[in-house]
Length: 117
Image: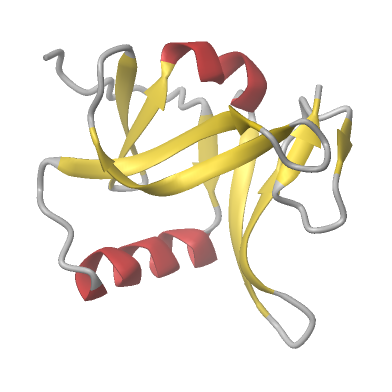
């Protein structure tokens, strides 16, 4: 398998709140060292595509990045949908969870987990 891409350019970014929550989840769930954070898309949802965010092993076709100290796996084909996206963590009264600020989305659903291009 290829080495991780360590560059000043990363396809997605994380807010400090998201980094903190991801590190906490990784520690709490005792995620193995060969796992990374999968960021991607899949068909479905009320707007046509759902975001994928979760710890997973590297698969064929993935590129590996190190973003803010987090090992990230992303399938090469998903980058065109996610390029420039910011992932945030909200912990307020009205919402709690990861949010996706995607400049490539033509529209998003009300829950923020589905989008169309």
